[in-house]
Image 1 (tube, one colour):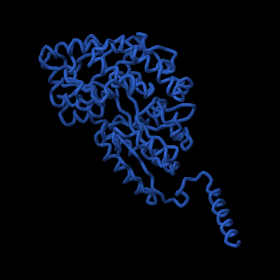
Image 2 (image 1 turned 60 degrees about the horizontal axis):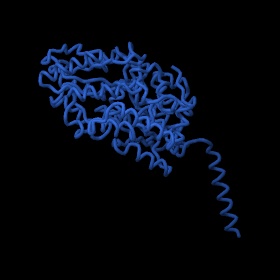
Image 3 (image 1 turned 180 degrees about the vertical axis):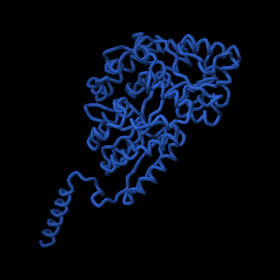
Image 4 (image 1 turned 120 degrees about the vertical axis):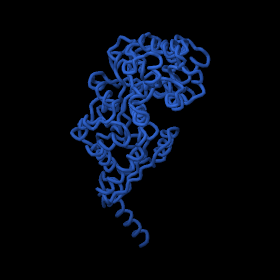
Length: 443
């Protein structure tokens, strides 16, 4: 009987101590703990791994009781590994995600804790508002930028000169772009190098062309929620531009046998004059090959919407998982990455800019970056991919655009298939559908 009473008293003591902990994160009471960060980025911004290792070194030096375990993730299992861990209640303290709805899907699934529960509006005010907007929902902030970058068309200036195209101003409008492609082809140069095998490319093309008839971010949300149809020319016209390029023979013939990154490497190997790229990677080419060799252009304009000449400057983000053991510590580390010295190091080491109001133009060393900074000051910012449901990409864009090349699926047929995918997405993912219905962005 004494043993039973003693055991009961121990249980009461444990429960009492647990209650005294309040909302404190496990292990943070004594200031000593290990912070786990699962990140990505080296594949997109060469140098990001070295940058993260340097951030860990600096943070541990400033906080000697804290150990940061930063683990670089692979592209193919970035989400699956996280969701498996989260389902088991064993997620990291900080998780990297691609921006917009690619992060919000896990918010809607209940896998993420609001960052705004741990960071004040004043603390978050150093982040550019357009970047915060991408992961703001239900009056809460769910993501914070890992870095920002800009999409554009990297091109070979020597190829342009050979074809009789001005290498400093190759095109602005769609008609000028098609004329540039014609001259390149006549000079025996493949105009566009791309890879469609792994399926990432369709969303990239959408980022360059899909928004051009839109006036508002909310028009994209209306499409996802079912208030608009993809068969409407406003949403489908960019599919006709794909067919126009394909039929003219301006795209590499082996597009179906190359992955996205292999297609992009055709500019480095001299197999194509242009490719869709990020500013970060284009800058790495500019540094290795020279400013006389590599140029960077905005998407050619054909649409008549407010976003026709906008640029896509999205942010990849970090979130705090629901199962994170050290949420306060995670928020502290994420704000550490936003300090001036560290956002400068991010640019110097990985060729990407943090969308932070304290980022200084005087830090820029690349001609491409200076050009991008000018675009950001003059043009609107809209990234098509950030506002469509993830299933729309996997079950719609990828197979549909692949069929446009493998089966000559016409644009009108592609638009109808994409509309069918949206309907299925709403039926099969009611939580995502409900989120889109309730999502409105103040612009």
